[in-house]
Image 1: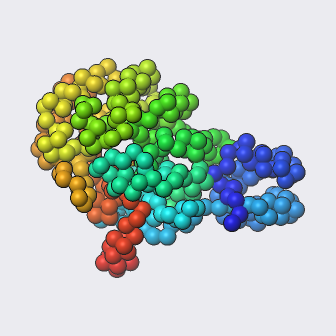
Image 2: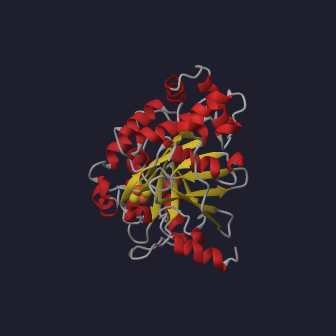
Image 3: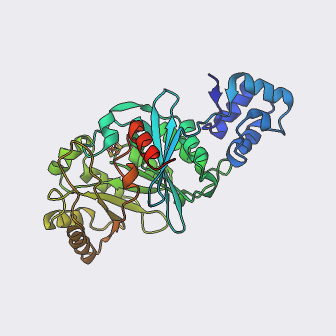
Length: 349
Ligand code: SF4
């Protein structure tokens, strides 16, 4: 199999060009063909000489995977299933809103973090995605040209795959790449550091922290990595950064009935986040098989939200998207092809 050109940074392209003894300016031309013109074949790179194209094509191809399946929710959310270079599958989710089209990309096949409420966590870990596989999701969804936002919130913990995730962010935001503003990109993490510090120091993208419980001894029950990355340390790190301007930090809080949705938890959250300019997203839990907790009732969520708002924390209840196609937060498994096929058949597609 030939190596992929997509997913290469400008310095890697320069290295390829140098190794093949092509003119140095070819690197910029390659980036333009890959990330601005989005060609699928080296042959289409018409301002490269024939011999340059031949030299490239001996070892490389543009690369990328088309989705093998897609499924549309009744609310317009669309889930894509992509193959990976190692022969597994991953999922990406496109979420349309009034003035936005957000793509939720995966960064790993499975995940090491093992959060008990998450289908991806149950898969275990099957490998990191390359920057090429991450960018391929962005390029190959049907809505690619109309996307307004990207969130690293699909399968995997992005800060457990920093080299490839940071490179894909560089490709999305660099002038020689897609030229997106970092304000259109959000990275979601359970708080893996020192990678989190690296991200905060070296990028201007937004940050979302999967919090789910303000008390360490309770959070560890559902999120075993709390032991390695305590939420208090994550929040203390975040305190050192300025989120009062363009850059935003939000805290994701999935609400479980009777587990984290009472006054004590609301007050714990208020204490934990005091002084941080942030938003709290309260999320309804989408049930998964063999997991005992259920979602909080809407009434309970509203009481919780009001308590946070009264204390000066901006809290919103997120509308649930894509529940019917298992595209909601924590439901991505990449292995539910049978379900996917069954649902596609039942919708007559
Ligand atoms: Fe991994 Fe995120 Fe799922 Fe936790 S919630 S297991 S970090 S994908």
